[in-house]
Image 1: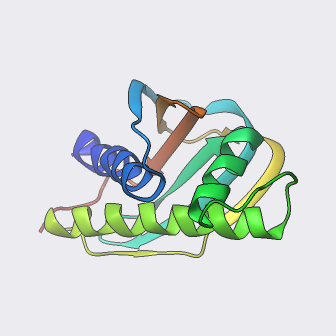
Image 2: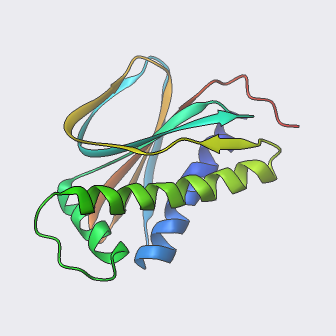
Length: 156
């Protein structure tokens, strides 16, 4: 069950980046951390999930990746500084990933609601809760996906 849930977020991340940003991502690692983890997070976007599946997922990236993603999401607008426009664009990109993952989870029998994204900058991501961390590489750099959830979710 755990891997089925996590894989929906992994697939959604690759799919949305491919569709919206026209980039191919390669998943290079997916690791389970039973006691939590701590990762550098120059830019992170976190969203909560409620309903048939309860948890959170975070997308962690360098500023350069955030700038490029924001630029492409905004139709090629040149991005040279971190501002609200960058936050809005990567927040929207994260919403698209959440929507795609939610659709995939619904197909598994887990009806979910997604919270509004929270974007943070210049902090380390840290959790004492069990989590999965997926790493992706692509032309723009590296992206990490952190998924943590209540493992008592039941498929209908």
